Image (cartoon, rainbow, N blue to C red; front, side):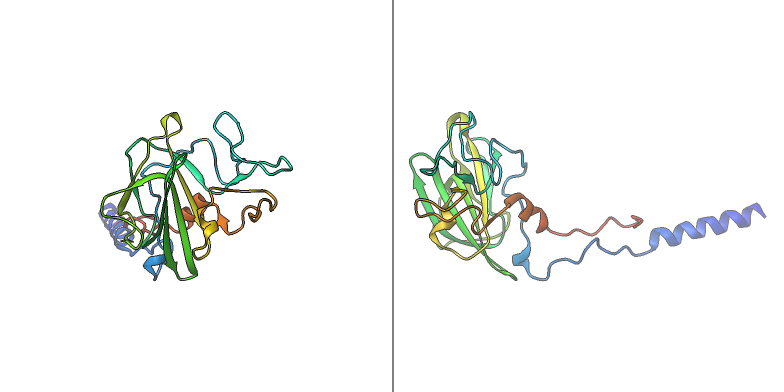
Length: 209
């Protein structure tokens, strides 16, 4: 009798392990809808999306005549000089600027099923062989973090629209001033955007849901 009970229990376990497990969510049908973080670690630096645009010591970088301090359009992430920067998604480099204060800036245009999106990378240098018009794949290293001394970091932003000059802005005024639109304009929380568009991986086989 005991032997029979053991056989039944063991048989049930076999069924449980062999049962197919559904993915946690369907994988995106359009590869252009999949994104990932441009750095392997994502530790906040001084400023986040919507923070007052200041140095780490609180000194304002820019303000309107009214005294309103501009607001940060992206996420600043701790990085090291020369650290490789990867494209957040499949796309085309649509702009590269060099600024004496902020080093290099890159814009990549991505075509998603919801329309065009621009990802913005500041404080970087393009790698040799890359320039405006270069196509990049998600995860492809196209730049390195620039040396900004004690302020070295990556600024990453997402402009939820097609290319226009304002896609370059690292900050915008809280209310329209100096010819600039009010924050957030067409910028969205970059960290939240990536988290919502990461590749969907199925659960390990045998995981109970």
